Figure (cartoon, rainbow, N blue to C red):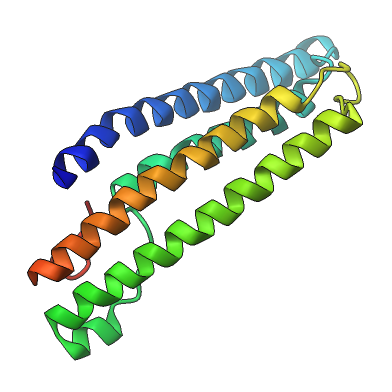
Amino acid sequence: MLERLEAGAAPLTRWMAVAGLVCFVAVAMATIVDVLLRWLLNSPIDGVEEVTRLAVAVAIASFFPLALAERHHIAITFLGSVLGARARAWLESFAALVTSWFFFVAGWQFVLYTEQVEEAGETTWILGWTVTPWWAAVTAFMLVCVPVQLLVALGEIARAARGAARPAGGGG
């Protein structure tokens, strides 16, 4: 059942990453158009930098759930390699729990920050757009990381309890 839940999270996280990719493409296109207008007509797009800055934050955050679900992260496996497969499995379980805690705390801090941005009524300088929706999107992506990583952690614990570790250096 746990494997099905982990597998079920993958399509959702992929769609989030696709949304981030679309965001990155939009930023690239806006930047190209801005540079061309600046070069050809000496008339850049007002506010493109401040919008791209916010869009990049959303785009980057959209990739975190996929990276967690597919275990695309840096891991130092030396100790686990020395201690053997069983110890490696339990070390990976511990690391997954620590990562879960990290994303819980990070998500909570993003919620607090987004609330502060909303209360302060922060806007972009040139366009005067409210930045709350952008930070709310970043916060939502970070909060999605919590259950995704908890599924990963539970999967790692279940594998360790069965004595079946993933291959060293293996992702998802």
